Length: 345
Image 1 (cartoon, rainbow, N blue to C red):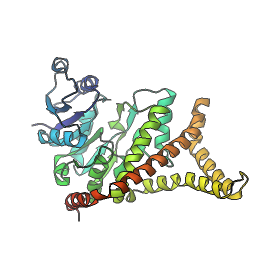
Image 2: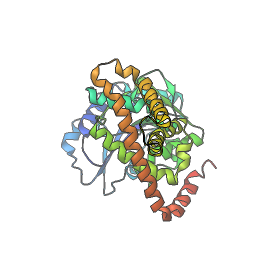
Image 3: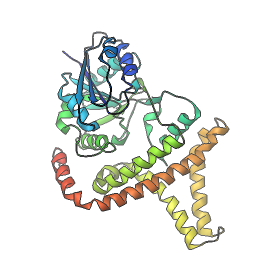
Image 4: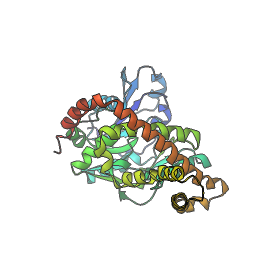
């Protein structure tokens, strides 16, 4: 009997060998696993290179280049009691699989995950991870290694999580009609509405490639926020239901308030302008105190927070415009939502 089915989609770059090597090194203690790779046909997969890992491996080639559809294809071939989702560029410690299985057996009605530790620890990657973890920017807690704790559905990384087949089937799999920036949030939102809980365990930490500050990180944030802006137009409930997202939204509003007050009162000495600017700067500095103690380079976090807010706001606003331009899709999306949300309504 297969205990864990590990689903790994490969859509673009093929970094799977290091991932499989880390899986093969896991101390299973009798645990039976299978690894299912769903690979976009244009990505080169060298079967001979993969065979040396000596693990139960299935490769499913597909012409579909959509993460949700690829993961659903993988799950359709899975025979394990529990499912694990990885990205192809992760590396897992030697006890990850046995620990994950133990936790899922103890609490089968939980979705479990762990922190994502960046493979690189230079200042650009550390800065990017710390910016993302702040409540005033993203509140993403999956980059922190702390005690076991419950997290909200926005904080489940789909590159590092486990759940039972029963939960997956009850939700209805991943939504194949939405984009890469929404499919995981929508899935875990339905889990949340069904009453399932999300637990983060430091024992399930993995290594994962993360984007480096400034350019790679900021470029990703712009495109991600643009997608979120468009998705928020059609799926407002996904963002309304998270306290962290509400905090982030209002923190973003400070920038346009500063700009508006400056335009209304052109003089830099304007009391309104100074009030908003001082408030914003104070919040940023207080949020950055821990990073500022690490050295002069980490003082860039103040600039980093501002730039993250700026590109995120521009991206989000442009996404809302795209949503308005796509208003004709609203009827189709309502039909999809009604079908998906019927499991908890």
